Image (cartoon, rainbow, N blue to C red; front, side, top):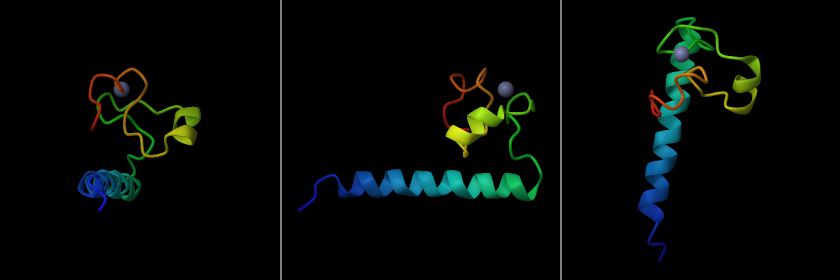
Length: 65
Ligand SMILES: [Zn+2]
């Protein structure tokens, strides 16, 4: 048996929720903008973390927004 199976599933569900939020932001035109200050998120950041909804300045402040 895989004792960490439930944890893995929770992690996958959290990732899926992030993807769904990113798709929602594409729909309402706010994708690529910080959800805290509204600034454009750097292209470089979006390349490495395409699901990011925070600019580098707010990344540490709200880890799961
Ligand atoms: Zn910001």
